[in-house]
Image (tube, rainbow, N blue to C red; front, side, top):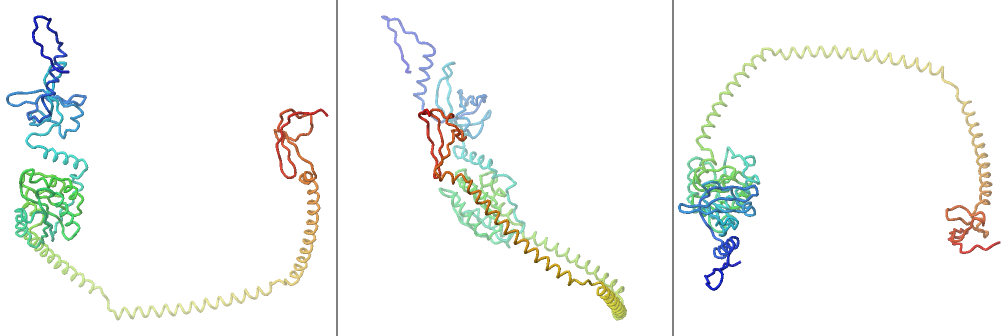
Length: 451
């Protein structure tokens, strides 16, 4: 609907416009003349309706405007604004016709002053946190004794010099392997991830330091990329992040196993000072010497006590020899006595057996005779039974219905399967089954002739 402007005409009656038509015309003019644009301001009177729509006022020092962000847009916002938040909204200008209120319809919202990079940072941070990549349970402990350290950074960065200087001062015994990579600019995130993966694949270091100096959010953006975060999260070696200054935070800091405020601090956290190790070793050495002296003294006293209790080996051997001779003599006597007793018992049992041994010759002859008679009787019975079986088979063959059918007879059955015995049982349209010697068929009665 377009707006129409009327000029007075004394010749005609002036037209009358309703309030609804006026508001609709104004709303259409606003929508056509104000394109979608970014507007900055401060949040005031923020209200979140049960329907999911957001209602608030966007203001600055000199003016304010009512704003609405419908549920279809607000559900994709990366944060929920609060009173006093400085924001930037992307909106169209419109008019709420029922009340005649001028307002803006918000399509997108972000925090003011940080732009889209900060929005991307917050979105990725929320996503990775939801996946559990920041959980303390999955972070690996930093080794206590470190001999070799991998440093992923730019070879020309001041951060590398800070790390090398700190390690040389605190832990000169540690070997450092530098994996050079760009730390800012296009494609830097992928190259940082490749350097970390290469350090892990070499499996030659105890831990990895990822570092660079401070800078703006754009300078540090390579360490906010998802590929770097996931590479660190899945790295089997502990990773210390020393990116930027103490106030700088990146995604790399949250996902790393340990976050250091500066590259120098990362080097200090990576390796324990050599002086501490030497002092610890000296203490361990002194403690070990004391324990060894105490143990030697104790064992010397125990040896003296055992020497006093130890009898003469020659006397012990003489006693054992006498005991052995006594046991050998007793064993020979017992063996001889047992053998004689067993021989006497064997002779008595053999004599008793000879007197009671039965004569089995007559029983064997009788058993052979009975076996022959049994075999002869069984052969006769088998012949008689075989002959009787042949006679029964002949009689059965004579009664076989198949032989009767082969002589030209047939069997007629009614529809229910019963035999047809009388022609008086037949009716027109009955279905009969006729079986001959070779096959069977079904017939239907069309007509019954009188006999």
